[in-house]
Amino acid sequence: MTYRAATGDFDAAPAQDPRYERSAVIDLDAIRHNVRRLAATASPAKVMAVVKADAYGHGAVPVARAALEAGAAWLGVAHISEALALRAAGIDAPLLAWLHTTESNFGAAVAAGVDIGCSGWELERIVAAAREQERPARIHLKVDTGLGRNGATMDTWDHLVGEAMEYQDQGLLRVVGIFSHLAVADEPERPETDQQLAAFRDVLAVAADAGVDPEVRHLANTPATLSRPDTHFDLVRVGLGIYGLSPFDGQTSAELGLRPAMTLRAVVSQCKEVPDGQGVSYGLRYHTNGASTLGLIPVGYADGIPRVATGGPVRVAGKTYPVVGRIAMDQMVIDLGDVGPAGAGLFGAEAELFGNGADGGPTVDDWARAAGTINYEIVTRISPRVPRRFINEQAPAPGGAAAVVHGGEGAA
Image (tube, rainbow, N blue to C red; front, side, top):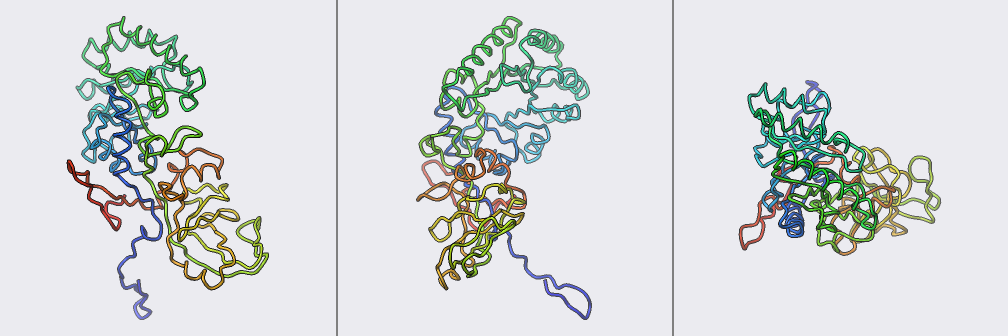
């Protein structure tokens, strides 16, 4: 905009697209590839693509559509509000929401045909919603087989199944599924997964004795889908894997046949030559070791980059540099070394924080190690201030290649 002093007004000017300053580029064809890879592993079990938390930061609606195009039979979210947003976008696939509070809108879920996870306390509220909507609810009974979060306890399971079947006989609900969640499937050597599997088989037997005939029994998450075929049952719930990330220490995405879908990039917003001993960022915990050029990267912890991740890698012009000094709210610094006037040539260059790891480029796992956390956290915390830009939005035609969408089409 241009300020006009005579009138005190601003003249409108074409807005610059912020997706070119910084963006999370989401490759939807990578999503499709990963879903197909996981579906082949799980077969004959079906795949539920977990798109909670805005599809782990990747964009729930575009990812859900891509996953369904690639063969996912179900979608899964944590909250009913997330499920309703998918329905509002026109997605009518089978859809489960499983984490509720006393304020959850069960009536809206029933009206929208959203399946509802039920740990026990929700049952009366779900039934009341079904009566109000004059439509039977679809529920999945959840049992806690050892994780210690939501789900009915083993001691209350028999009572919950009995109550649910009474309501089913009255036409108020349908027990569509029975499920639980694994605690240590990402550590395949641990015995607790065997214990949870045995407990799950026991509760399935109790349910069968009570007359429950579920459409789907589901227990496996991404690591169990990849490593424990005995946990697959009728349906597997895959989250991390559809985004192309490995759930296992010591195994990369590539080794699992997965393709990371998110690339986080920005542009170098300043390059300046500094003398020996120049302090960098808050606390001055880093000083240059000789004359150097500092590059400024315009993303920080307000964009979801962990403040503690000093040393995280940034690739500029084919070379990877560690972040030096503290990461600030909006920016971070890399030390380009003593490159002299050549450093000015990197001003405005693309800076990649992580991507698919091709040619040794930085990865989500690199940033997780720098922050002392897990790859799940790195992608899910990328904030809405970073625009999403989707590529390969069109599914490939049979025998053909996907159409690539360039230039920020489909941003959310």
